[in-house]
Length: 507
Image (cartoon, rainbow, N blue to C red; front, side, top):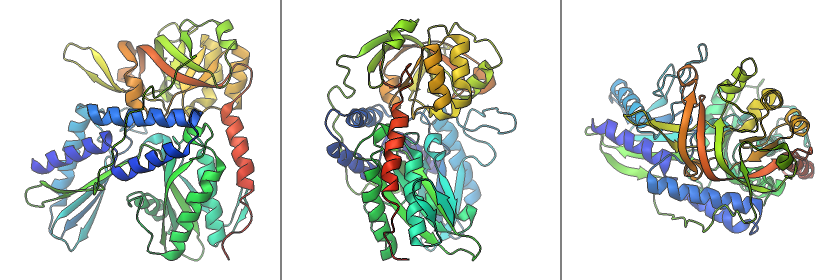
């Protein structure tokens, strides 16, 4: 039982309390951004969220990802029992609302509800010569996981041209990986890079790099030079926090190398959002007690900003919203939402394409969100975490659903494409960008859960929740006149990417 309790403590701390090296990187980014800019506003909101999550012991981000454990243990250690301990701790953490139920059968679409299932959680065991047990955990959400990318060299890259089988080609791949993430991966972010290996081991190597402390120095001088170059150069792209534009796009870069076979040359990049949730512990193999915390050699406190998301001059939106009010909005406007909104992710969008909505959405607000929810014994639901999910997944559906149901505002993160932009213009609707990962900040704006549909069919994250909110802030990043901040930042950063085309490292 002691091992299970220690693992539950590790899971809880990883989900709710960012490690000092990550806090330090975010604090540095705050200093670098221009005061009063959209990026500075986003960073202030992020810091407010980090402080709230720690104080309330609630998930930093509602998407707690696929829990991945790296376990080093002595010869003879009972790995079968320890796997059971991990699974029991995962179930308990899910029941307590420290993890969102994220395990879905890909064939049936059913959510197991407890974060267990075929291959979930992910546990990698390694034997070593030490007597104690080391457990490292990373919670990597789907928004950043979807921005992982792998390149097979040689290849042609937009803006950078040919990437060959050499250090120059690797350099170009890494820069392109940062560019393609834009704000969809909840930038500013961190990247782990694997050079070599095969398709599988390359991605494993890339994710392994995310377990390195941010302030370590790569023992390979060539890789150390490349890491420093990427950290300096990627920020010239000025994609910024949430893709709003800004001075800080990348908060960390760690690179590893693994031998390859002659026919294959892969560069694999694991992208992680600002909510970089990874911690570790050293356990006594006999008692299961925690002997030491990893990544916590020092403390790094963050001060909650006053008025983190400045709403001076904000425009209040309350459903049902008129088309006239929507068409008066423009990119850059800050809005405050009051009243009812409805969550809708992938399964809801797929459903609404062929069916009627369970509630009247005319003039309404649709929130791309899969919250963490807990239910009282009397059946009352409470929101424990409620930040936005990446909106680009809904691009095939969004314009049609807006027109079909008369929706006036869609909230998410990372922006949407041309089809949605055209649909906003045609129907008189806007896209509002909330701050990705700020799950506690937005959960505090929810005053009541008015109801839910499709929880049995789709599970908690994909259900349609009807929420009463007050003072819910967001920024208009796509308006009803065809303007898109996301398109503008992508085009500007592509110009800057093209400026990095010329060789830097000798072949």
